[in-house]
Length: 467
Image 1 (cartoon, one colour):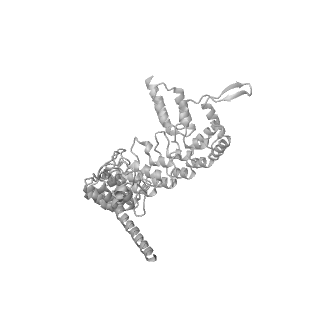
Image 2 (spheres, helix red, strand yellow):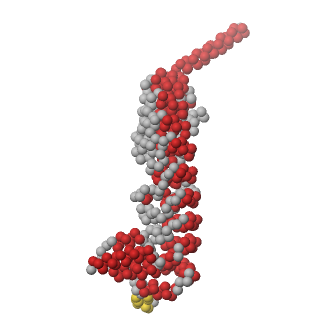
């Protein structure tokens, strides 16, 4: 009985082992048939053989976008060499294999007639775009050898070179005929795209040496580099011959953009110094009439104001009715006011007038002290000021008789604020009052704006000739 029991146990154990082994081999053969996951799962996990078997069992899956699955991973340890993480969902298998560097899968799919240049609807990229973006050098070479178009474009007219992020990949593409300066739908060249994506300078140098021209729309590239605070890229562009923006596109001036406090820029002072050293003009104005100095004053950036003043920034320019000194007075920025005064004596007069106009007594007295130290007879200056602006007396119930300034007038206001642009427009009209012009000349002398007098005198002479 004992022997029979032992024999039964042995037979039962053998049957269990046999069933287990049989199930194992059946599972290998039928795994693809029962597996609920996409081929991209096996591709992402590096199991190329199983992915190929699945394609052989279900050929239609070669042309179907990868399906959602909780088993799909974004990135595995052996996948993708330095590129972006990719969600496989929505990618065609060929593109998924290109992202992960699965050469065997790529060869199989292409051998079965899969189009290398078809765009993935989920990301608007072909397989070569994706391989280039993920630095898959071997995949790039394989796809090109298998007939992929080296300049395949997506719906935004980006070629694979627009997505390059590795010098060797860029060099290979350009040596094999990739268009070096093709514009995408936004007018960006491949090297501009690399700058916008903040690629390292060694890539930019490789692209330049292989035929990409950084001077094409160079002012825009420079603005991209400034906005990202990338000193090395800025220096690369300047050394490549990128200069200031062409006339008519003043809103793109890199120097003005760098000084604008509304733009969050790293290493702002270092960037501005770099541009000034390269000879950029600090006195250009943007479409709103602001100069670099005017922006620096508005940002209350004392080191930046000091740097611009030392490099020839025009203290008169700035914005209609608000040159730098006016803005500094508005903001009660004594240290910046002091910098502007040291940079130009005429700021004393305009600063005093601004402080008086806006009832900033503390800073007005500050200006008066500075004027006195300069040897200005303030009593005489007051008299001249009052003579120009026609003091009249009015009666107030609360305060009795008051001395009130007459309306300054547009023309004199422009002269006081040294707004040459608006003054020129104003003088172009035929109905400018002669007395206002004469008064404007007096104001120009009083405020130290002698450079505005010739235009006013010419207008007077023209009026006499017309009469």
